[in-house]
Amino acid sequence: MDSARSAILITYPEPESIEEATALADAAGYKVWKIVTQKNITRSRFGIGHGKALEVQEIVRISNPDIIIFDEVLKPSQQYNIASLCRIEVMDRERLILDIFERRAITKESTIQVKLAELRYETIRIRDKVRLAKLGEQPGFFGLGKYDADIYSLDISKRISYLKKKLEKEKIKREMHRLHREKSGLPTVSIAGYTSAGKTTLFNRLTGETKRTGEGMFTTLSTYTRSFKINRNMKFLLSDTIGFINKLPPYMIDAFRSTLNEMTYSDLTLLVIDGSDSLNVIDKKIQSSTKVMNDLMIPLTKILYLFNKADQIEDHDLFVKTLTKSQVFDPLSCHFLLISSKTGYNIGRLENFLRLRFNPQ
Image 1: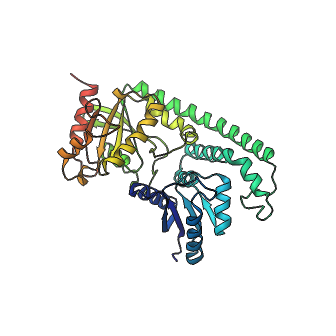
Image 2: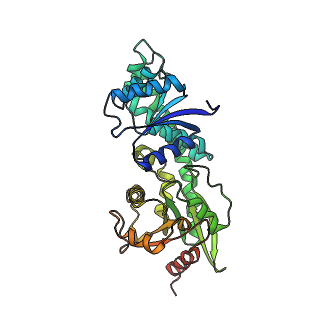
């Protein structure tokens, strides 16, 4: 076995599900040693079928991994059952994402937001976890000891209230920065989109910055704003924002709302999608991203869809034709552009779009 934290990953059989779940595990610091797939997850007492659970138990016995990761949300009872069967720690998808957030948080605001999301994750599970922790066989299984559910719930409520107050102070600071930017009179543009689509690479390409890229999912958790010029005389403010992901729960979006709200004040949002994916995956990612945009009430007229990684697409004309078959994206009613943040392909056309958008003379 590798010295790194090893994991058995339980996910859906679709290639895109396996790829995304593996990337999430990697971003959280786990090396996936074995992948087990199941068409329906979370419908049984083990989160997977009884036969599949016994299969996982045998894999654990032979390979002795550090953890089992489920690519789905588990009830505390399901988590307890599979963990008791396999005698090993079990983590679900939401806890995995929170672990990544915790590793990526570098600003005071993002650290508070992550802690708030973690407490809301716990809030949903309090009573079941306390009940299971008192079963006797493994009373400290969830690290709760003999806590009473009401006491534990009150403690979490107090901590949430405290963090909300701290977050409000950070929100005031953010608002002051935003007002200062508004006074500059410069057009504001936000970069948004599915995580790992190349948003930060695009940000670096346009601004000349050297923000870290290629380090897995959710490299950016807090808004980062810099200015950039087109043709040496037209100046913009550009913000890199947190990435979206499939099945991101409402409480996580709510915890990061002050960061996401930066887009609502932008004059334009560049919604970056990985164009090298299959049409089916592109549809899913557009759907996930557009849902967040709709929740933030950002109109279609303020969105430019950028299909990135054109350097990995063999036939660009065929790609555009394929887009017309999309179930969730209508090329005729949306502004879109095929680009490559890596090679600079069509970046000139993007800059020209921005120039005409904000200075049409």
